[in-house]
Amino acid sequence: MPNAFSKEEIVAFENILEGFQDALVLSRNVSVYATDAATMERARDTIWRPMPYIAQSFDSTVGTSISSSYEDMTQLSVPSTLGFSKTSAWKLNAKELRDALQEGRLGDAAKQKLASDINRSVLNVASNQGTLVVAVAGAAGDYDDVALCDAIMNEQGVQDYDRYLALSTRDYNGLAGNLAVATRSFGNAKSDRAYERSYVGMVAGFETYKMDYANRLLAATTIARTINTTGAQVRFVPAATSNSVGGKINVDNRYQTVTIAAASGTATDGIRVGDCFTIAGIEAVHQITKQSTGQLKTFRVISIDSSTTMTISPPIIGANSSPTDAELQYKNVEVASTSSTASINFLNDNACNVNPFWFKDSIELLPGRYAVPTDSGAAVMRASTDQGIELVMQKFYDIDTMTIKYRLDTLYGVVCTAPEMCGVLIFGQ
Image (cartoon, rainbow, N blue to C red):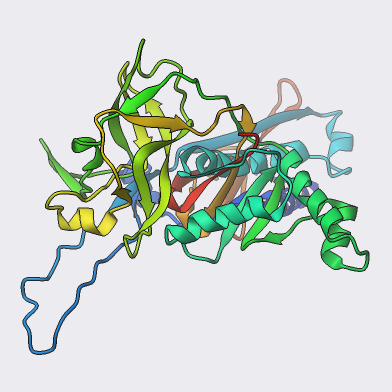
């Protein structure tokens, strides 16, 4: 085959795959759902993945019929799309090839960038869609900061295993500094590693990771805004499907459009996607017991839709006034008090780094696959990581310029299936 890979190139590709796999730090700590290439093509690269079921229970007595107590179970799902198609391409001429292959430098930069792209996709989903918000007044510095993340997860019924926290470098080092000083007794492994390597490890049930890049939240505007909690906005009704002209279609229940008001000016002016807030009188509940935690429920802004409306996550499911079975199953707030002008309190008062934390199964990575022909003239190699992420390397020689073109491709998707099982930790608020 004219464009066949040389032995050196095969070795280089194997090294790329090995290094690529090692670099997938964040993406190793989310769930992976393997997709079928033919099915995804027929479904326009979108598949609906289930959200966690939440069931109800009731008291019963032996000898008494429960025929009137059977409930309809509502299975909610979210759309998952192979929405990331990343490519790194380069070329080497006949002179450059004399050195590049032997020194093993072929594609090093490409593998680093693609691995970074995948990790950043996971980071963006966790940072932008996680709805559990922990805002700390001071800088990162001690165990109590991470323990607040543990508390908000426990109170709302998130599983107490497979929890991860990714911290910006400065926030991570602030926590490591506390370990190095507060437990200073050399010979103690935890203290030594914190002092020598700025290493934190497991804290308050979270496996922690240091990020060399982090998303940023800008300061929220201080205009007073309100929302009506006496009406339908606290009565979101989850639905698995809805009727359309073509029949029933799936419904994404992670979001809700709400109407807000301001004392003066445009209500949504200055609100940004990603802003974090609470609503007066709207408390979080334990997802299983449905008991109020006594803490205000936290929400995120997903989009600004008009001068008075915005899309938020999660939806406000109060299950008030003759609720449906679906409302009882997925109730996530207790309306402790109602008001036609309930105040909205934004939590990101100051610009800050976003430190996401999540339960492993709340975020899914969907590996995709390209059907690249192997008999069209270009040489093709493909291989997959342990997670199923496929890398495709192609090579084509241009006789006119004595140049070989290389490209490295990967296709994947990332989805947050349970926004109430992941969140963000922000400091300096």
